[in-house]
Image 1 (cartoon, rainbow, N blue to C red):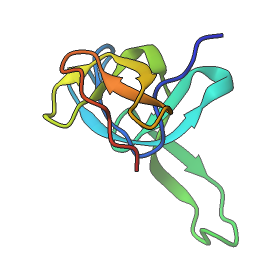
Image 2: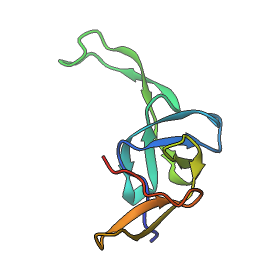
Image 3: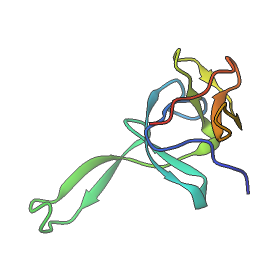
Length: 107
């Protein structure tokens, strides 16, 4: 199994599929399924029955998961980049942008 290099809160760009070119923030990473949910990407309509949370029920729009291979992390300049891991000056593994070589700031 490969190391998943995306985290919740990262800004990513969709590079394949119907939503190609869209950017958004990662809301959830499903590590066991290699999928991510991105804010505003792959919106689907879900029919809900009336419940205590939504007394009227109806049709709601929500994000659906997308395969992790179809997204790329955006570096600080806003360019899509592959992600690597290397030791920083404190001796800890940290993610870095392979295009610029700069470390990615973790939130």
